[in-house]
Image (tube, rainbow, N blue to C red; front, side, top):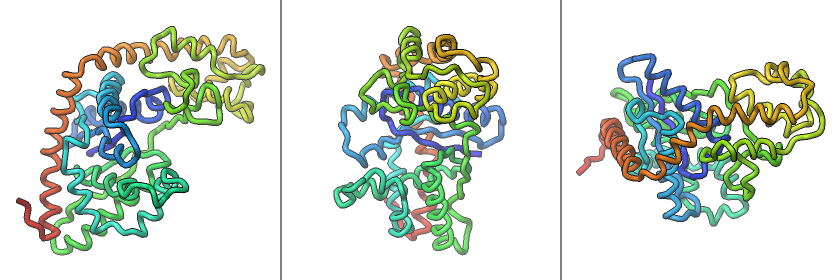
Amino acid sequence: MRVVSGIQPTGNLHLGNYLGAIRNWVRLQDEVVAASQEGSQCLFFLADLHAISMPYNPEDLRAGTLEMTAALVACGIDPDKSVLFNQAQVPAHAELQWLLSGTARMGWLNRMTQFKDKSGQNREGASIALFTYPVLQAADVLLYQATHVPVGEDQKQHLELARDIAQKFNNDFCADGAPVFTLPDPIVPREAARIMSLRDGMSKMSKSDPSERSRINLSDDADTIMKAVKKAKSDAEPLPSEQAGLAGRPEALNLVTIYAAMTGETIDQVLATYGGEGFGRFKPALGEVLVETLSPISQRFNELKQDRESLDAILARGAAKARELGGKTLNSAYEALGLVRG
C-alpha cells in the first residue's frame, strides 16, 4: 500500500484544513506504519509547482511552503514515518507531466470542472498551467506507483483522469510488457467534516476571509481560541435533542459539527448531551475541547516556524527519498516512449 497526497502551501492554516485533510493524513500514516507491510509507505508533498498556476507572490510561496511544513509536522506527520517534501525539489514531477501530456486528451481536460471554476469568465486569460494542472496531479501520484490517494468530493474527477491517463499509457506503450503505471484507488476519509465560517454558517471556513473572527487558526493560543468560539455566530434557540432539529440553523449546525468532529462523537450523541441547553453553556464546552487538542499543535507549530534550518532539512531529506522512489518509474516511462535520457 502506497499512499500519496499533496496540499498547496497557502499558509494561514485553520481548523477547517486540520479537520478536512491533515488529521486524516496523520491517521493514514499511523495505520500504514502499524500494518508493517513491506513496501507500504505514505508520501505527502507541498504542491508548490501547482501553486504557480495562479497569480502568486514568490516570497509568499516560499514562506507558505515552510509554514505548511511546520503545520504538518506539528499536527503529527512524522518525517521518520512518512516522506514529506515539496514538488520543486523533485524535478521528476514536471518531467513526467510532460511525458503524460502526449497521452492526456484535450477533451478530458475540457471536462475538468475545477478549471472552469478557477478561470471564471476569463478562460482565455487563464494560464496553460491551470488548464494542465490535472496532468501534473496525475504525474504526482503515478510517479510513485501510488495504490491509494485520499480524495474529497472536489478531487474525485482528477483521480479518475489520472487512472484514465495511466490506463491509456499502459495500453498504448506497454502492450508487450509489464505496465508502467499502477492505477490508484481513492481513499474517501471516514469522516470529512465540512467546517464553515464562524460568522456565516453557509460559507466554508477560509483563510481568504478578511475577518479573523471567521476562523480558528492553527497558530492561535488558548485565549484566542476561546474568544473566537464565544464570539461565533449562533442563534437564540436552545440546541435540539436530535440532528433534524438543526435544519435551517446553519450556525448551530456548524458549531455542533465541530464539536462532533473534535470528539469523535456523532452529531446526535452531542445533542443527547447538550439538547435543551443554550449556547451560553455549549460554547465554553466547545472551546475547551478545541483548546485541549489545538494548544499543543499551536505551540509546536509556532516553535517550528522559527526554525527554518530544521524545516529546510526535513524537506531536503524527504525530496531525496522521493527522487529515489520515483526514479525507476520515470526511467520506465522514458523507455516505454522510446526516448533515450542523457
